[in-house]
Image 1 (cartoon, chains in turn brown, yellow):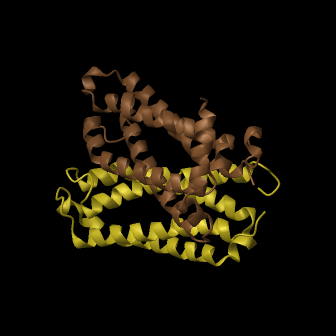
Image 2: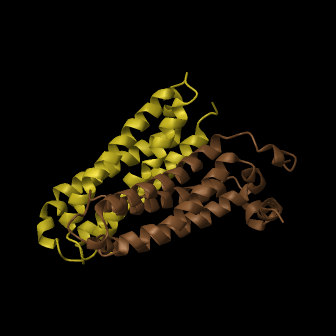
Length: 174
Length: 148
């Protein structure tokens, strides 16, 4: 069984779902959901940025990284949840088309990598006793995190500009 | 701007992604002002740590925003929602000035108190509401402008 044989029916199911229909056929629902996506982008990006600036020793130097992490974690998780839900709703309005959009594919790969990195390596370095992590390691981890999340953001911007679809999908589009 | 295929998407992408810096930090600051985030931290520390980057982000927003506007000033100016956004931006600026001139000046009196004074809470709520509408208006501009 190929990945394609799972993803295409899933995309079609999203397309045909009541929320997919509802948002697609409404003039104001799409922008409304998009604004939530955009506001959560600000908060999620802000929390990731401030944590990484701390890891690089550029902000809030007087306290351990883990203290700042405790402060911003609820905001990070909350905004990530809003991002994922609103993103899924937006995706459902044209899921099959998005499946064939190379920018969207890139965005999803970056998102997967960014989320895994954030909850494994990044989290471990953030929560670790500072004396046990070399400053160079902290800086490298911060840079990787910033690059991965920037990839997600750039993919999100790019998918609106990409008009051609991956050829294997074009036959499925109306 | 109009003559380059890439200039507009690049500037617009910088404008949108700088929201992470600008809006993200503004929300964190407003949440401290409301006494719901970073409660154990001194208000002056939060202001001192976030403000330089917050203002840096704001500068990038303004510069990229002006560049986008210059790409087609008449189209922007003839769009109602653009005018609304500009008025809200002025109000957000006034909110910061009023805060700095009043309750912000006396920050030493409530620096460590997680229960912030009413004036600080009011400034935070005004700021959050204004930014939600400014960003919504910004997104709306792209729908309201005539297609290129």
